[in-house]
Length: 340
Image 1 (cartoon, rainbow, N blue to C red):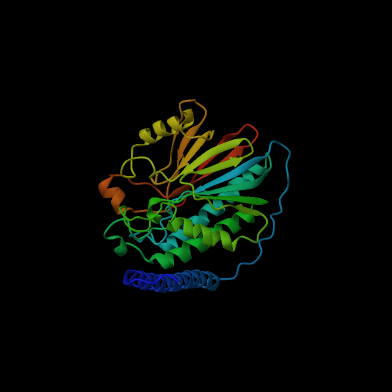
Image 2: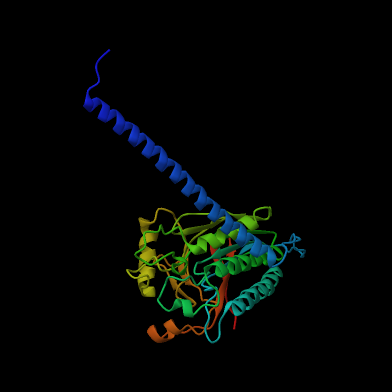
């Protein structure tokens, strides 16, 4: 049997020490992970309980309406920039709820007008981002909200659920697509947080989970920066709008040029139209091919001090409603739905 030297003994002791330290660190890591998981579970459960405290979710009966002959179309709701919990002299969480549900009421009336000529059985709801106001966008933001992140998480999630359920009372089936915005950012622009870790996306996921058991709703979570609408032969992109421009803001002409480059092959998915939020204004610009367009949609918010003072811009609250011919793959009619 070989004789152990002092160096051998020292090395053996060091290995034992390293192994013990490693085991101790592993145990601490597991404990930390379990504690973090417990906090996450507690947060989710608290949000879920808060959601339920706002009222039970009863099943939504399918709509009853007379079917007419003609080429069926699909309704498209582009709902964006609710800025949930933003507080100004004319806007807060309660006003947000009233305006969002006002859109649903007016969308229902317009849909029944469309049904006098042709079927409209399906609805696509594209949420465009900045559904919540967030808390990390500018230094004084904490003084311009009526709820912090937890309140925004619960209130906006429930409002999204209410919107989808309202759509289920109008249409046979509803497809939901969620894009996130800059106001959902976690931390400052310099924070090392993945873009897809975003409060908007968290709000969407809570809403999606609450609607998971309804077979008439289709809603897939996506970690992509740009979302896609595909219904029949109609294909469109949904972006928030802050993706283009060095500081998250560029001219509308720049956005159109950028989308034209996407259309020419820079973005590897063929599309016709692009839906944009972020700018809080309603507008439309044609793409270079003369067929597709970039559609800007307004906000439910009013009296935005930053936009009024810094950008010299203001807009009356509105959201967008389209009807789509899915065979020809194009928009047949569009409506700017005023909410003031």
